Image 1 (cartoon, rainbow, N blue to C red):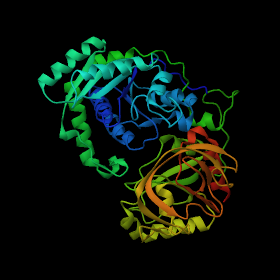
Image 2: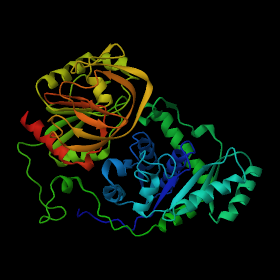
Image 3: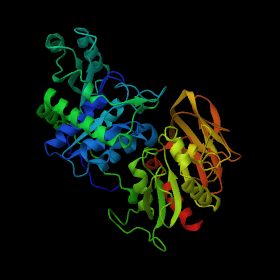
Image 4: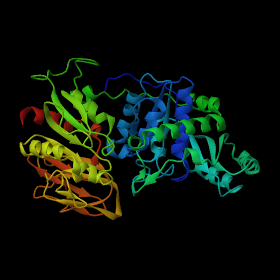
Length: 468
């Protein structure tokens, strides 16, 4: 890649010993507090999570971007980071799960620790101190010493009960040599509502989410040493990474150099309609960027409100989200359901992931959906969650048979049957199985993928939009 290197951007990683410690509150609050002081803050999230980046975007006014070493490969972590951090004063990276937790059975792969090492970024450890005192020193000492290549530069104590509790915690941590860079009290104002797949996305609670993010920023500004955190971020090691660029990823041309000529798109851009709105909030920013670089005019539509597809639509992308929460509203929009079914029947490219798969089914929890697929979907008590290795079983608008990709599943629904006569993927996860549907121009699957890892997916999709 030949994009601009951003090795001088100050950066830090907000991590924790375990999920539920307060990473999102602290990371989002820090982003908001620094933004309120006039800094251009680049927001990032380790792992495949789609929801936290929405809160990060509210806090910073910039697109929240994911850094996932499993989905994209460790070699793309720094370039994707550099892409997002261009023009920024500082970058804040929120971790995932516990600091050293990653893909099951894969060592440090996809962990916050791995990303911190790749980015040469110092770590701030957020500790839930609500049920401990002196033991906090043993906990922090263990995390500091577990991997010497991970530099824990400070601790933020969360859910501290009282001034006396704070004194005990600070005294205990003196022996570790790790500075306390913040103390936060328990505060219900900053709590964000959750449901079966985690936090409620920003798009579903816009006004209250703005208030919550503002409260997080105020709490972090009051309880944390912002100057110390900025100084820590400025101590990050030099990062020799060229920023990822969608056009260069799609059309690598070593003779053209950065900004060099791209292949001309015949007859103007293809119109690709991308589902959005409250029901379809899961999308990686790089997908739209790749589609645009491949020659598409990307237009967002809301299946809850829009009765027609955008004018001139030649292909549709329907990502993840919560259609099960809005099943009745989606079903009531009969006009749009018919338009999507007609487009799919014409052979036009339709790519659907997870929520998109449910929307294309005959029904969801007994309510009519688009009927593109002869399958039914329903809510389930079982959570399906985890990284997957996959191989394309059938030629499709996204990939040729035999193409290997990595993905992620995250849902509490079941589709019956789970695969069509021409499955989308052969998946290796807890078990080997065929999964998803390829029918005409339709590619529908539970698997979330990150197209930056295989940019040819976007190019192939746009080419099919032109020829279908």
